[in-house]
Image 1 (tube, rainbow over the protein chains, first blue to last red):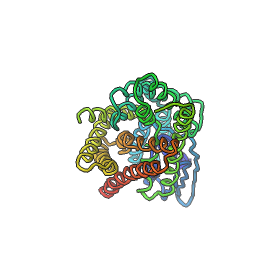
Image 2 (image 1 turned 180 degrees about the horizontal axis):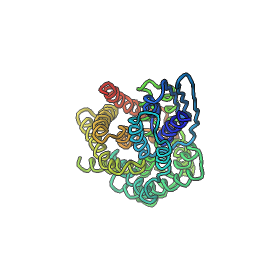
Image 3 (image 1 turned 180 degrees about the vertical axis):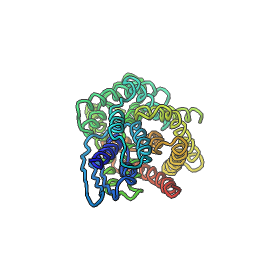
Image 4 (image 1 turned 90 degrees about the vertical axis):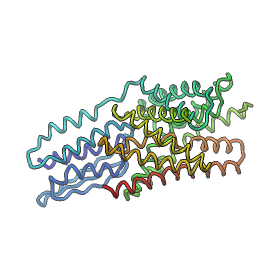
Length: 255
Length: 137
């Protein structure tokens, strides 16, 4: 019974890390670290979509399989669970208060993100500033800022409706194109600048980074599948932006 | 140059808030973003190739990320992810789409090669630093 509880606890910690944008190898490390001084053998196998963990105590084998379907980015939770697992790893013996630790993990899992308006405003700043970094002119700053704020509000709304990332990226890309065309026709900012800046909040940067980190640590299965995820996201953004621009050109619009 | 560094700082901080970094890590990740962008600008000045510059910037962000991660006892991903996003080749992928829908395939090929080159440069830069970081542990 005791082993059941600590195994559940460790896999739950791993699940929080994997769901919130942690790498695959970090999930495996976390589960192993939490259990290795409490059981005889611990083996884990983690892919971006599922966790398999098995422990052996006194010849008895216990196994857990957990599917992971949600995939968002909340690095605060990754940091908190990382800290939590290091504290848990220091505990020894057979009388750890599992309920207390489980409650702490539940609290971490339920933690909210920053305030909604604060987040969409910072998305605007991020997009406008990174647009400026890659060669936008100063008059692109304000329209990019507005477009990116609206885009982030739209994306947040679609995420609440549980749309797939593919659809969100296509709709987001076309939304950006519409606003870029509107602004540039009104003479505020340039079409290129606004689109380049605004799509920065959609690009799959986290997936790309995690794909690389997984591949380095020898986890090629995860590396490849996350790499494909990044490619699909990039293609869907391109479809959204490209389709709208093409329609605009057919209707006789100019750059 | 100073303006560019301020924008590097601002955009990294923006992404940091968007990805919900812990409060005490936001400013630090902004700093590492600015340092990484300084690396990009210096490399562009020495040898004007966006692929080489992106590689340098990725190396810089990897190194600062690892250093800050050791200091703050947080996973290094937290500092690396927000800084990497502005490096992602948005400009070239946009130009590729534009060239394709205008039927200009030679140009599209050229731009898509640039896009892939930059994406690989980010990966290579990160691999370079992180493999060493893993040895030191």
